[in-house]
Image 1 (tube, rainbow over the protein chains, first blue to last red):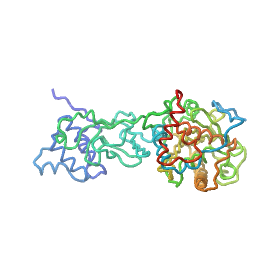
Image 2: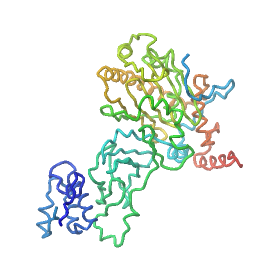
Image 3: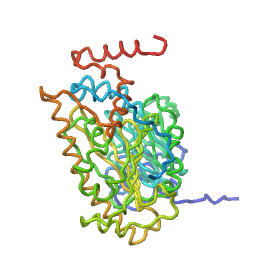
Image 4: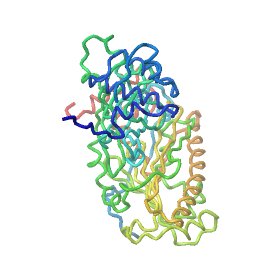
Amino acid sequence: MHRQRRVTPSDPFTLLRTPLGKAGSGRVRYGAAMALWRDGHMNEAQLEVYREASAHDDRNPLVMLHDRGLPAVST
Amino acid sequence: MTRLPYPTLPVPNDWDRRGLPAWTYHSEAMFALEREQLFLTHWQLAGHECDIPAPGDWLGFDLLGERAVVMRGADGVVRAFHNLCRHRGARVVAGDSGHCKGAIVCPFHGWVYDLDGGLRGPARPSSFGEMERAQFGLKPVEMEIFHGFIFLRFAPGPQPPVADLLAPFAKDFAAYKISDVLPAGRTKWENDLPVNWKSVRDVDNEGYHVAMAHPGLQELYGRTYRDLNLANGLTVSVGWFGDAPGRGWSVRHYIRLAPDRPDLPKHLQRAWTYYGLFPNTVIAMTPEGAQFYQDLPLSASVTRLTGRLYRHPDETRQARLARYLSYRIDRDTSVEDQQLSIWSNESMKSSSFEGFHLSDLEYGLRCHHDGLRHLMPVMTLPDAPPEHDIARRNAEMSQLSAPDA
């Protein structure tokens, strides 16, 4: 039976989807990405994309992942 | 005269009325000793829990090369860490205060920490080979919370735990409900003064000058003001207002608007009370608000005056007006005190300066200076040793005065 993951505002999957453009959002997404890497949901290449994107609050990591042939993390 | 519930030290009949020698206010070597033996080993006040209400909220506290961050974790618990990334020591947060949403991200290379200080992961993790993340969390700083006030200490020191040290204040703090205060607007203020920190304390540690130098305070409570010295470097000062209507604009309206506080014990009603903690911190209470202020030394000749302001929850409009008026009175008092600190500090550079001759009303200075002499006995020397020899002389004198010497 598929168990629903309990989603909270502080859940890394939720924080990974922090809207673009908000001040500090790049680092929020990167911090969440690190949690997902730690928990085995993201590989290091994907993590590095979020680190690079973290300097730009309006830069979309999903576009960068696509450009590099990397899959997005399933949320 | 109002009875006060504090275990007060009496002013002796016969006491040495001299202050510290002038050289201790200008010596770089003495300042280095104060850093090591005093400031980093004694409790400092970083803020109040209400300054960091939500998970991820943080306060920064820098002192003489040490840097702390006080963070409310995702679990709601307040913790204090050295503000140093375990990678290469960069500040993980910058500024007086802020908010980290979900994680602490070092701005240098991107190491990421959980809000409880644990290392979530280094940037480019495979570039570190095998790495035990548990060994690289942010290093804790000793912290205690007392009635909401957050105290830090960068190194072990002679003061007992804060709860024990400030026990004489506990009933008053409970009566004021200090735990429940809230930030008052833009809460933090700071001002750098070109004086040695002891010159600031020398002014603040006595009320003898109030009648002459603080017309506002004198009018407010000068006739009733008292300074009390307690053991362990604690002081209480209190002035009761309302015995006269006041003529100055701020004082006159403040007396009229200050809220009655029948919930407070008699000795705190219509009172401004100041609770001092050795070496450099004061918590001040009025019927309508609270604050703390402290003197943070930046160098032997520069001191940062800083503090934070608080209000009570469910503040009425009248209380808010009174709080604004008390701020106006305090603002003038602070400017006056700053000038006095400058004059006091500069006097010691004169060849004609022969030291203080203190009044019984200035016994608080003696107590404060004695606390410093006890920790750093080289301060008892009337003439300055050579700068390069001050630390050695102090170590030698400390050993001689040790209990089993």
